[in-house]
Image (cartoon, rainbow over all chains, first blue to last red; front, top):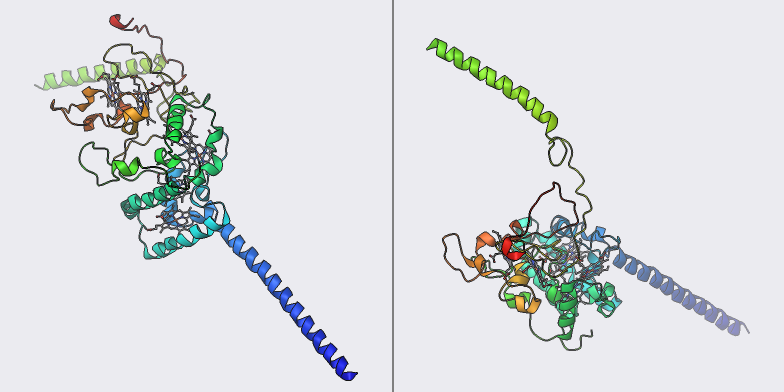
Length: 213
Length: 149
């Protein structure tokens, strides 16, 4: 009897402890997960991006004069809207890649406007390559070209969009410099600037395989 | 000698005071185009509307720099990049459907022909401007050149 009782007690205690552990892990999981996602969200704000002077003094100032900062409807595109993917997997990957920015921040790689402009060609090319590879996914989060109304778009927009999309072009092929000043681009006017080559600025190759429209 | 100097001074003073009184009079009845004192705060630029992209505007005389028939807001023209030439250059115009930049723009100030626009034509908006719906400041009787009417 007592044996049975003991066994039941042990079981009971073990069961209790197990349940407790599961509960604890569960709660910790919620907290961690919540905290993690909160941290993700917290780093997905414009205020976070421009808390670094490299971002604030250069690209942010330029962006303040553009349509994505202020326009007649007041709908804004902030830094993460264009630079950080919306869906979870791509977002995490981009966030991990972006940890190099922290490193370069402490190294002071681009801590003066001169250094920043010196490296801008490389940074811009990284961004162009990224957007080209994703078929400008971040632009298309807001702009869906299937709903472009060509009867009210400008003459030039209507023509270039219809021609461009039928050739498989993507937003970034034509809209470089939409939010910031551009790095030097070779246009063969005057002497060589050591900038982006014409075929880099206007790539002619086909759209990457697998990219959907 | 002394007399001459004195006369000169008197004459000078006389003209100066005349000038001043004339100046005061002028200031009373001449209005600046802006209608404001130079020291007064800037006028509101006015929300003038730039018309939508449209077909090229007819020129009023042959040598006129054609007006820009489209929006140019936010177009970068800097040492790094010339947005206008991104559409109007001879290498790009076919793709963009823009008018190719005039051959006259290829000549430098010594009359030498270059293979692309001369740096003195780099800043297009020195000569080419878009139009807005702003009212004209003064009436004028300008007419199109004979040959273009």
